[in-house]
Length: 58
Image (cartoon, rainbow, N blue to C red; front, side, top):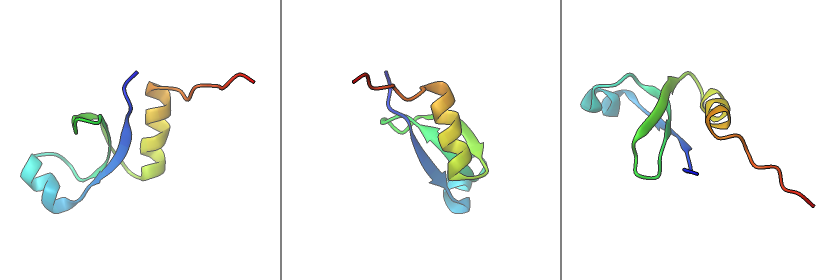
């Protein structure tokens, strides 16, 4: 399973990359997977939809 993390792309970087500013779910390699999202919380919800957290068995 790939690890995804939230990352904020601000206006200056967004202009350089040719994307909208906002929060993105990214791979470890830096590849954008989902976004832009309005907030970090929205981005984390999307990450959980893509890769639901594992339930640990006791």
